[in-house]
Image (cartoon, rainbow, N blue to C red; front, side):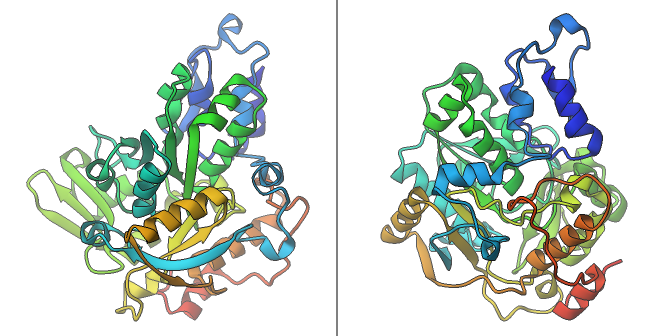
Length: 404
């Protein structure tokens, strides 16, 4: 049965990305995400899957099926030169011209501005973005936005794994006649593209109704326990008293800020918070082969190649983001934002020494040399041959504070 395949190939090998799409596509509603891990509600054979394989088919954990998705999107596969950045039309730097969006953003508000531009340019009904659990406000949760005010609640990166694609569940179940835009992490974008590629009614629905996809580059992510630990052990707060969590609030590049229910703000330096998160990574995240999936319409990363060093010493780089425009739809949306005076922009390449990318490349190369289960790379059979530099050494070279 399908869930057994999912368990044997992904869950038992710690390759789950916690994206949540398996729960969203399960036609019998017998898969539930519990503490970021998919589980069956019942183990009785009668309730189980029969010949259904949807949860396994959309899972990006072991095989993201990047070559197949690239053929569907671009009509070709990436070359070895495109290994880490994927196929794209052009890259630009920029920031939002909307003062409120800019000031509340982590990297200039490019992704927020682009989502709002997409809503107008593509006539979208809903935007699915990374928000906060309304009851447990230190936890990430998918949020549904229809306007600027609603999307503003979800600005900034969350630095936390959670089943983001559960936000699609009600629309998938109802096969709703809606137009959806969604932002996510690379692994979540891979899951969306696998869903859209299915020769199945749910795949047909996804192709017709998920019309715009953006992604945020990801060096690695952390479980929710990492955030809980910072709140309890570093700030000596009860998570139940947390009213708001921001990972990059204040003067660029921002700090980890927790606001309690008495409106008091508690701060941890960004570089200290990110360093602490290393103890709360999953195997799938640490061994991941994608900084960007390369499958979104537009990919975003920080315009500052080393935000961790900038959190120690004032940065010479103003707050800005980098946009990697990949598809015709992506170009249409970004051009709409520019033409309607929403984005300030200039041409900009991605330099090799982006700390997040370099750390990602070195971790992946390390795991490729180990005898362990890891996800399939975007180029089948291709292995990075660069000399591995230790994470501590990378931080030292880049001017970042030494890791633990």
